[in-house]
Length: 584
View (cartoon, helix red, strand yellow):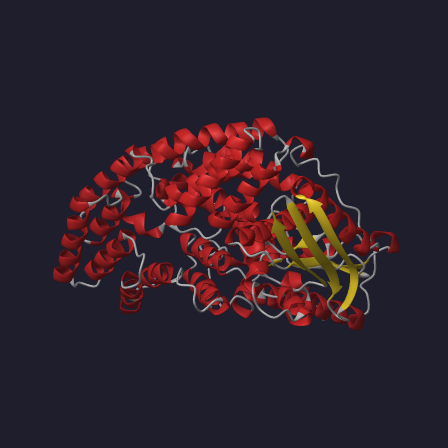
C-alpha cells in the first residue's frame, strides 16, 4: 500500500489542478476536490460524507435528503471525469495523482511512477484564419479551412483542441496571444491567413508558445486549390512535430484523392452558413451542401451537413418533421456507408435517430462510437448530452458529456446555456439559473437565455421575474410562438386569467393565420388548467412527429399530465415510457 505523500506536496499539486484549464470554470468541483483532499490530509475521513459535502460544498440546507436530491453523487461523477481529463492532458507529467474511486468520497492520493508521466499531448487553439482575398466567398473559405484544421487536430486523443465556437470568439480582433491562451486555458496558439484567387491558394500559418510568445513553427504555402488537402495535412503534421506528439493516421477521413476540390469548397461554405443558425443561413447552407454533392456525390461530409441542417430546421419547426425525416434518413445512411469511421457521420446519424426516429438505444451506440473515434469532438459530446442522454433522464452521463464539451469549448455561450437547460430538465433550478447567467456573462449580446431563464424562474415560483423574461424575449425580433405560449402559461398560473386568455386569443389568431406548433398550444392550455385540451395538442404533436417533443418525458412543464394514460401512450410510442416509470 502506497504512503500518503507529504501534505505540502499534495497541496502544491491541488493548487496546480485548481489553476488548470480542466477546472477553470468548475467552481463547485474545485471546492468539492479541495474539501475532500483537505479532510483526508487532516485524517478526518469520517467527515467525508454525502450529507456534509451537500451542506459545505453544494450549499444545501440542513433539510438535505440524498434520497431526493442526488447532487453530491452527480458532482462526484463529474469530478471523476474532470480528474481523468486533467491527468490525460495537462497533468500527464504530474508526480502526484488524486483519484475519487467509485463507491467512496475519500480520495486516493498517490505518487505516480516516472514511466506513467511521459508527455503525450498539449492544449492549443486555432484562431480564425484572416481572409486576405477581396471576395466575400473568400471569408467562408478561410473560416472553413480553420474549422477543418480544428477537426483534424482534435482527432488525436492526447491533444486538447479548443472547439470552433470558443476559437471564433476572437475573430476580427487584435491578437493578444497571452490573454487568449489564459482565457481558454491553452499553452499554444495557431494563427494564419488565406488568400484565394482562381485555382490558387496562399496560406500562411504560425504556432506560438503562449507563455513566452515564442514562435515554435511557421510556414507558407502557395498551391493549386486541388492541393488544399495536402496543405491541411502538412500544417497538422508540422504542428504535431513542433509539439513533439504523434498524430493519428487520419483513418476517419474520406479518401483524399477521391474528393473534388470544388466540392470541398462548397462544403466549407455550407458550414459557414450552418454555423449562423438563422432560417435564411440554414437554407443557404443546404444549397451549398447540395452543390457539393452535385460535384461529388460520394463526399460524405456534405451528406452529414445536410442531416445537420435539416435537424436544426426541424428543431426550430421551420420544416415539417416528415420532410426532415425522409431527407435526413437517406443522407445519414449514405454518409455512414461512405465513411463508417467518420465521427461526424456517426454523430449526425445518432442525432437523427434520437429526435426524428426515437431510436434512443441505437443512437446512443452511434454517439459512443463517434466519441471513441474522436474524443476531442466537442459537438459530438454536446449532442449526445442534449438530444440523447437528457431526454432519457441519464443525468450523470449527460452532465459529464456537457462538461467534456465545455472543456473543449470553454467560452461558448450556447453550450453554457444548454448546460443550464440540462439542469432545468433535471429539476435543479438553482444550478440552471447559475449556468444561464454564466452564458449571459460570456456574451452579453447573446439573447438565447431569456426564454430558459423564464422557464427556470417560473418553476421556482418566481412568476413576476419569469414574466419579465418572457415579455422581454417576446418583444425582440425573431421570437417564436413558444414564448407567447409561455406568457399565457405564466399569467394563468399567477391568477391573471383574463390577461392569459387575451394572450391565448392572440396565439389562436396566429394559429389561424399561420402554422403554430401544437406543442406550444399544449403549453398554453396547461397553464390555464385545460388538461384535456393540452393532451389533445400533445397527441397532435406526436402524430406530426414534432421534433421538440423529444423533451416531453423530462421537461417539468409537462409534469401535470405526464402520468395520464394518454400521455403514457405517447411516451410508449416514443420509447420513453421507462423514463416516466423511473420517475414515478
